[in-house]
Length: 258
Length: 258
Image 1 (spheres, rainbow over the protein chains, first blue to last red):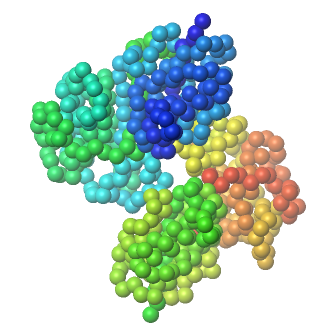
Image 2 (tube, each protein chain N blue to C red; image 1 turned 135 degrees about the horizontal axis):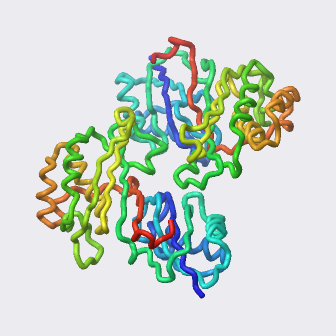
Image 3 (cartoon, rainbow over the protein chains, first blue to last red; image 1 turned 30 degrees about the vertical axis):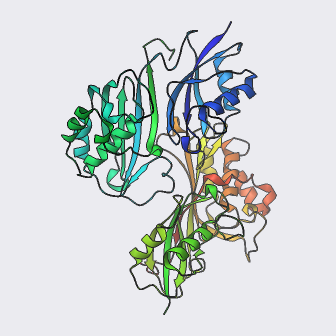
């Protein structure tokens, strides 16, 4: 009898061509599947809750996978897989899941974090994990603009081409612009967005648009206009991938063991 | 008339073959000299306060260099050099220095920081900057042992082969084992060592030795024995390079403009 697991995975996406397996490229999914094959001799498909792009990171990506046989503990499986992973990818949790658990289909929401460094000198230890802005930003204006993103809306203006979706309406539950406690000296700023689902490049497009407001090129009220146009060309440029982290994936309460 | 500058430089040493220029290898010194040549058309030797090894980082390396001609401001020079440096190397300060300033000869001390992660799960975002220990350590025992390192002593037991020195006596002014405020959850621990000068691999040999004490393989009193032997074979193994940061270089007060 097969056994289905839910994995929680953290990774530094800098040196990977994104989540999804692609011929001739190092991907997170391919790296995980190879580690599982080598450590358990089982050829398993690891289904992520979503495909992160090249250079995008995860603090807690969730993936489902079904094993033909695994009679040892979840902890033994976690250790086995981690023993074959590179330093940049780690399985942080393994849980038994319902037989038909599917990490994409069963997800009811996600939270992303986007990290920015404003104007301070380049940080050689942070460039893999932050978008560095060349000019100061008006944080209060960005916070006002972010509040306008929240709600049940058509986010077509924030969807990059390339993905087919039935609808571009999403429920954004939270959108925060969060300066670090030491913002004055570090220039560290994060933008967190939580929604029931995301369109292609939606977070990076939102971040790029909020930065236009931060630079004073547009007012917070402009966000309503952009949303109303339902056309990608009205929003700001997409922010680069290195600042983006998939922070959390949500499932129905009790659906996955804690 | 030539003009001498003192540069302060931060770098992520992970992808470099150390500080010093070596044929066919990417080094920090080589990268800086090439950036200066490209941005100022001057072929300048950049003399660091010391040679960091492959994989070792710097928060504030100091280097001296003499320009045949530079009539613009120090800030213009800083911007020119940084415009040609990769993301992993940044010149954080440029100061005018006395004509004969020499970053090695004039240094009166240095402080290194060594970063450890104890036992917690692998951190894909931290592996470039921390040595990960597989077992718990006794922090209080390591702190007692560290206190025994401080003083004017012969550190021959902590000197790796490969460097010719007149004397292996050094004045260690400080040696601290510092758990992070969130140590219980993060496992982050740092060891900082300050001295008037360091022998080859001295900090990494001290750290490896303190970890032996932390593991309970030796008592803090063993440090006195190791020092007394004046022979490298009595100390612990060298800690790996990725945890080590050159944190500060000291010069005589007033010798360099602040």
